[in-house]
Every structure is written in C-alpha cells, then in structure tokens.
Image (cartoon, rainbow, N blue to C red):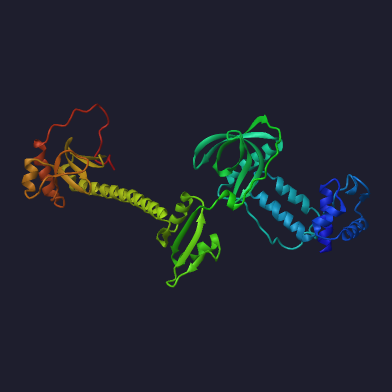
Amino acid sequence: MKTDRLIGILSVLLQKEKCTAPELAERFEVSRRTINRDIEALCRAGIPICTMQGAGGGIRIMDGYRMDRTLLTSRDMQMILAGLRSLDSVSGSSYYRQLMEKLQVGGADFVSGRDSVLIDLSSWYKESLAPKITLVQDAIAERKRITFHYYAPGGESVRQVEPYYLVFKWSSWYVWGRCLTRKDFRLFKLNRLEHLKMLEEGFAPRQVPMPDLSNERIFPANIRVKVIFDPDAKWRLVEEFGPGCFEEQEDGRLLFQMDYTDEESLLSWLLTFGAKAEVMEPETIKEKLLRTAEGMMYIYRKGGKLMAQKELALYVAEQLEPLGDIRYIPMMGGWLFYYREKLIGGIYEDGFAVKDTPASRRFMPDCRDEVWENTPVALLPCTILEDSGKLCQMVREMYPELPAPKAKKPGKRRRKSDGI
C-alpha cells in the first residue's frame, strides 16, 4: 500500500543521513519514478525533504526534524506498545512502563480498541532474571566487562565477557559476547549465570559477528531416533514438533521419527513420557534408557526397603515393650536391638533375627542359623515374633548368655525411640 511505503521511506530517511532514489526503489521494489512521486507526496504533507543532484547527492531530511507519532497508524502503535509491554514483563525497572505512558499521553483516541496482542517474556525465574537483564543492558551501554560463574554441561567455570547483545531465543534469555577465556564469541544462558557482576574495566568495541542462532547451527542433528508413542501423547508431539511429526499406525499408536542433537537431551525428553514411549532405534538409546530405568528402580526399591525396615523396627519394639529396657538404633543397613545394653539381635535385610544362644535354640528348636547381609556372624531368624509373651521370655533367658556390653565413653544415652 502507498501509505505503508510512504511511512517506510520516511523511516529510512530518519535513520540514514541520506539515501538515493535507486536505493529506495530497490528496497521497496518499485520504480524510481514511483519513488520520486512518493517524495513529492511527503513534501506536500509538510515533511522537510531536501534533494541534491550530482556526485555525493541524494535525498535527506532537514536537520532537527522529528517524526510526529501521528504518522503511525493505530495498528502500528498497538504493535509498538505490545513490544514494549513484552520487554516490561522481564524488566527490573519502570523504564518501559514510563515509555508506554509517554506514547499514550493524549492518544486515547489514536490508540483505539482493546489490546489484541499480549506477550509475556517472563518465566518462573523472573525475580532472579530481571536484575541480570538490567545489569547486562547497562554493561552493553557503558562498554564494561562482566564476570560470572557459569554452569554448563561440561562443568562449571568463572568467565569474563565483553557483552554486545541480549538475545531472547528458544524461550530463554542469553548474552552474546566475546569470552576472554575462550578468546572467541560465545552465547551464555542467563539462567545458568550466578554471581553476575559488572567490572570497572571497560573495553573497546570490536567488529562483532552477528550470532548465528539457526537451529541447524546451535542444534546440529546427528541422532536419528524412531519412537512409538501411545495415542494419548499426541497432544505433546503436536505442541512440540507439529502435527506432521508422526504417522498414525493401524493400532492407533504414533510412529515418531526425528533428528536430535545430543543423547542427554533426548534421554531426558523420552523419560518425561514414562511408559508411553517405546524406542525402536537406535540401540544405544534403548540400552541407556534401560540402564537409567534400572538405576531408578534400585533407588526407589532401596528407599522402599528402608521404609519397610523402619516399620518392622517399630513393630518389634512394640512386641518387646513389656521388657522395659529396650533400645534400637539404625546401623549397618538395618536396625540393632539392645536389652539392658546387651545386643540381642536386629533387623537385617527384611527380617528380625536374634543371636544364636542356648535359650534362643530352646524357644525356636526348628530354626536354622543364617548369615545375614552386613553381619559377620550367623543369627537365628525369629519365628516367634508375633507372640510377644514368648518373645520377651526368650530375651530374658538369653540375657545371661550374652557377652557383657563394651565400655562406652560418657555421653547421652539413647532411648528406645532414638533410632526412629
């Protein structure tokens, strides 16, 4: 549209000292004659445009001219405010809010209608992120170096950087600058920065290469993965990769094929689906998922085992309650039980066992001694645990047969419940 082109030409002339008609014609894809007519239209609208012929000539706007905001359409202003509002969502100051108020002063009629675009660039980390963004902006403006502690997949390090750009990409904020450690330009994720400081030492501006933020450059695909997903995972696949990322099979399951950058990211992503994803290829990913699952099973089974041992310890303590002088403590992967300071037995693995003495043999004649995990001596599995009276009597008769307790250093004595 002609109006949009006129505003575009005016914007170019406000940003550049001068520009030639051929340059404008090429930029807006029109003829030089059309550009000349547009320049005449701008002059009639009161824009002070000067044209100079010959070598070194061109088109320019007279010094001191400032564009009236009414040259912007209502839609233009809405988009500008939407952009400012998005920056305000991650700002730690009131700068962008005050700027929006300036643009809107006296413009209630001009900025018509309700906001149709709302952009929130903040995240769960807004409280810690906003000060970082502000500090990096100040360092860029003042040409000051920054230093920070950085957490990367390869380890932790302290970096000094000459910052040039704040970048918002892949739903995260980054700083692009020259790393003095690597002596090259690097991209650093703000959420991985800690102890961020602006140094007094300044730096001279360099020729800065624009960061190549293409997915192919940052995330080169080198792992081809093939996964079968349950049908109820469809919404996630569509959300993250689009509706064309899978083929629906005859049984309703979804065949997903995609190229991934690194194994760690792929494994983490697959684990979020639990048992709703079955990896078909490659074999290396299947094996690593299996090892990860086995490791998780070990952790949780171990935790369940410890909880079961604790519950059993409480039950044994209740059964021995009539004896009166019982204490029990967690030790050696189980629980040790003492009667009047003599060790009578304990919980090893998943059962309660007592020391092998003549008395314990009399009370449990059919019991055979066993070597339990984490104990060097054979113990008798307790087969009369449910009979509190018989159990207490056995412990009383075992007591004289047990070795005397070792001398202890003075200290606080544990009560029977100290181990729980």
